[in-house]
Amino acid sequence: MPHHAQGRKVAFAAFVRRALDEARSTRAWTGTEVARRTGVSRQTINRWVRGEWVSDPEPERVIAFCEGLDLQPTAAFAVLGWDRTAPPRPDRAAPAMDPDVEALLRRLVDPEVSDAEKFHIRETIRYLAYRPSLTTYEQNSRKRVV
Image 1: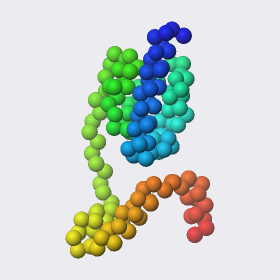
Image 2: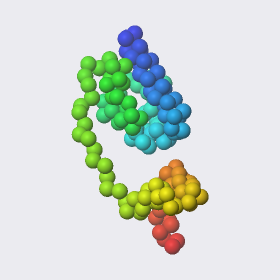
Image 3: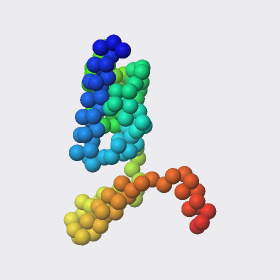
Image 4: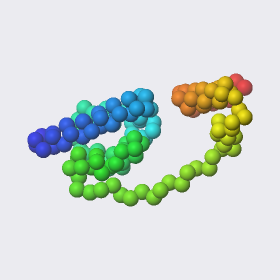
């Protein structure tokens, strides 16, 4: 393997490792959470960290990884030695908010709502946000039981 290619792998591995360390320390994300939020599999991310790739990473995956972690894809492209920039992405419109979520947010800022109730709302939201998702099999099994 040419020396230049190995240097790119080492540099990209360090870039990915720093991004993962930052996600762990500032957001308390696990590797599984990073994979879920970026859409890049844990196996792919682990190969990047180990520098075990034969051909260059797919630009779309590098972009997804960076965007999921609020990083500029051009920084990753520079580390990889690519002479290009990330294709411009249209700004995503925020999805419509669920009316129940809007009601909860209103209660959280309402001065008439007690601190204890606000605490319980936040704890419930936190629990729901970070609990493991049900697999399709589990969801179907629960439908049959009910």
